[in-house]
Amino acid sequence: MTTRKPLIAGNWKMNLNHLEAIALVQKLAFGLSDKDFDKVEVAVLPPFTDLRSVQTLVDGDKLRIVYGAQDLSEHDAGAYTGEVSGAMLAKLGCTYVTIGHSERRQYHGEDDDVVNAKVQAAYRHSLTPILCVGEGLPVRQEGGHIAHSLGQLDGALRKITAEQAKSIVVAYEPVWAIGTGEVATPEDAQEVCGALRVRLAELYDSEVASAVRILYGGSVKSGNIAGIMAQPDVDGALVGGASIDAGEYTKICRFS
Ligand code: PEP
Image (cartoon, rainbow, N blue to C red):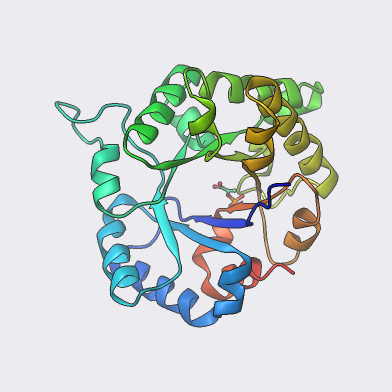
């Protein structure tokens, strides 16, 4: 049986400049012990402009915190003004890159084809995608949440090999729970995370399905993380708003 190390990843969104980023990472590193880091992988996903500062701090102080970006270009280089490539993120020591966050899908029109191209770009540069899927409120109300999330998973994984898929992180983030304070129940989270794992076995095999970490995201806080983490198919959390509060994020990372 594969043992999946839990992952707590903090999506800072468009918050914190590079000085504030350093202060937050220092507080996290101070607040968490080696014992904590043995039990859980702790990641931060700052804005692009903070990554160099975070890299310098993490490397210089040999911190056990890992980091990544919130997006990347589907292209590797060239005339794409304003874009940031996977090669650039890899050079900055990023482990992860978030792809298909609902805010990218909603405000930047990213569809499953774009998400798939970005997943392929991440793998070209040895970055681990944190692939976000999840339904909006109308789809949930119609009972289409599982089909919707599985459809997004299928779309994102086109042309992705089993060897690559084994390392992906999938985050189930119901859009109605993001930044709203409305958290899905642990049972809601388990229902979709379990279905995503079954789909991974159908798309690939049981080895891939049992290796992939599936996170829940949507208004996670220190007060609700334990119930979510107790679910068998939930291997961690993607945390937005609460991840830029060092004290709160530290408590979330110590969910047990
Ligand atoms: C997110 O942005 O991925 C997220 C889950 O946000 P929040 O925790 O604020 O709902």
